[in-house]
Image (cartoon, rainbow, N blue to C red; front, top):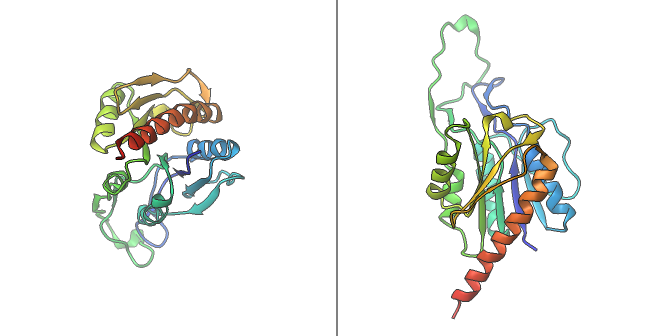
Length: 221
């Protein structure tokens, strides 16, 4: 059984001592995946962002707030795991600087300069072992989703990617498609709850990971 590393929830990138840039990710998808994996007996580590959902029983849990904190946790844990499911909604842009105290409207107009955040998946892919499996998520407008998810799969050198329409954010149900490195496009049954989708997804990812390991074994002298 694979040793699974799951990320879930949003990041919070500080603007000042009070305010931050975040997003509406509930973390329920990653929560459901980690819960289902632990139920199956998979050794599971869940890296969980700032969410209000109670932490699940079963997986080992470590918390993060910012993308930098998540990056540090991934760097530490990824070498000891076989599969990564990157369900966290990591900020694409972060403030260029953080105000030391609390900003006040009395200070007048505020210009907030953002810079691109590090690409965590791409960085991890550069140091992966041949027997490790990497799975990402793509959240896009429905009309752009297939093309952008396929491009992200190739660009980040992933084994599979879950393509989700924007409507999935904060929704209890999922209408998603699983794209794989070998060109497969597998549509999940429509309207699955996130726990049901997690079970469906892990069934398929277990097969993909077994194929990765078999290919690695065959390449050994």
